[in-house]
Image (cartoon, rainbow, N blue to C red; front, side, top):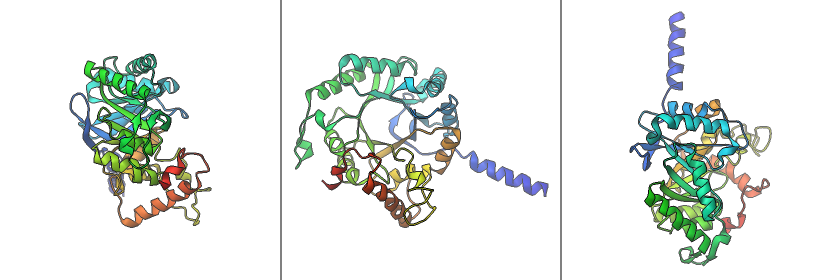
Length: 325
């Protein structure tokens, strides 16, 4: 009886200790390691412990670089302390991204300085020009988005950030946007290395029609974010049930896995997620997969997400008209 109990414990421990193995060479650390396809981001609305970054690193398979993202480091000091501690010993084996929303030169310099403060003050792996708006386009040709003209302020910001790459302060430049029209336009810009886009089971139609195909055509890797729709998908439509009365609602890991499983997702290389505590982080890393177990699974999650997509009563989708372009 004691022997059987011991074997059971060992089996459980083995499954819990299985390392996260999904990585890609589309980004590498400065030392040349492939980067984890799960990126751990800072969460402004939660209290992430300082131990979260080190646990994330421990959960990765050996020789995979962790991917950290933060855009407002002053709002989650404990989490940032954990990143800063990790960078003291193996900075070149870690991939770190940050960014800012302003396009002014002075603000860009300040945002880069803020980012560098937490990762050794030498270089940042990826700087994101965040939340690019349709208004930042000079013109938009609705019949051919590749003919759109980008506004002067944004162009100057991109040019300035490219100089950082030449100077060795930053390794890659990207943009983030909530608009898939904008994503489609900027996928055509050679000076942009990567796109950071919203995509998930409840926010997919515009991405699959507009931004993802253009990213694929231009060989631009995509970083997905907000795939849990602000952590609402896991709760269903109330009391843990969907409209059919089923308790089968997605876990956080299902939301993250969805972005890699669809036929529309080849340009998607990474998913960002702001795990709120150690338990959520471990469950996401152990449960995430690259693909669906069956076509029925994909249909189920697409249908679940469509309910939220159609309603949009939380205002998550800022450009709902893009679904019908």
